[in-house]
Length: 488
Image (tube, rainbow, N blue to C red; front, side, top):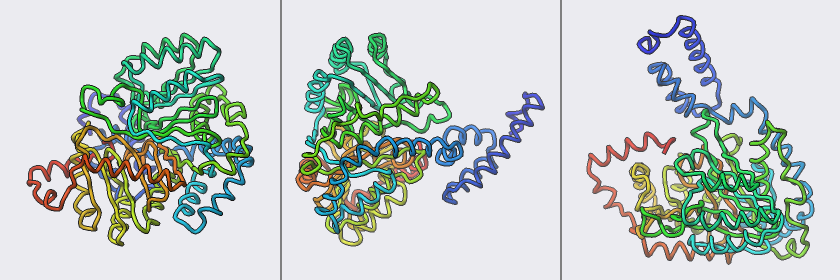
């Protein structure tokens, strides 16, 4: 370290050592897995200068930081207060859930979400599942064109291409008609894309915000995709805003993704997430109350009695429970017959990995599907190191080869299912803001399972022979890639 500090003033040298010492103490005091703590201690002790740099950007435990600052607790209290009227008028939907789903696998799943997210089951008047971008965006453009009061859009990626050239005129038209338009995009996710159209929308009156611009949090992104229109229509799933999510773009022959549209009371769960993030983002300017009744679905007693029951599991790095990840763990651990999962990536943490292995060992039909044509080869290399134990335990692994598979779905016992934004990699499981919409409906679960079965026809099933035939050089490459699992 002295080499790096040779040319620094003595007082700056002293400050660096003090800062380094404080980091070591804070690291030891953080409530982390011992192996992670020891790894960072090793880096800080033996590579102090480089270690401090990497720790600042990639090693800080933002759960601990947020708890010290207290803003997560304040936001949670705001959510509880503001969402109370929505939950109260839908309380009979919760009662109906226990009548219809009590003593089934759905009950522990819902209890986990409710406990961890301070959320509730809500009824959706309608649900539509989209397995291709063309259908989703055709429907979304119709809904945007019909907006009367407000449009809230939140995406990880907002490109500037043929799709946005079709969306922007619709949004400009709605702005001219007096409709409120708010757009939030992830700053790092969109850093390589032009912002000409977004600036045009901003000049026309749209409120456009880049999310997570703090360089100290550069490793922690907002990966959610949320659309709320007039408080009555909502969208979420895997698709971002870009032409490649429709046709695969220049890189892929096709793009297989999954998204969903829901209407009615359940839209409040999506608006809650958008409102919470907007509130936090604008807190220095006095906040912005998007929890108000006029941003939420109007009361609908019929939906309470007959709507499809759903519950949203959401998480961010600041949240204490990582609700979306833990809900997956509960669901997989409670499965009695089958667990079918889709994700473009597979770099799981050991909690998810072990529960998948446990399910397979107990005789559950565990199937995992990921893309076999990657956008990031290093992620596929790392994924290959996890196949053998899964296959040995009895699970089946499929590589989708017709194009790029970007869907994030899970269906358990062909009874309950979820669609959302969370990948099965450590960035999504631990670092990003993510969400999954759990649907307690056998017909919807059948749709998800049927699409999985269709996708299998475009897959190569990984066999034990495939795994064992990998040469030593490639094994080393794959294991080396796995070392970077937290940043892939």
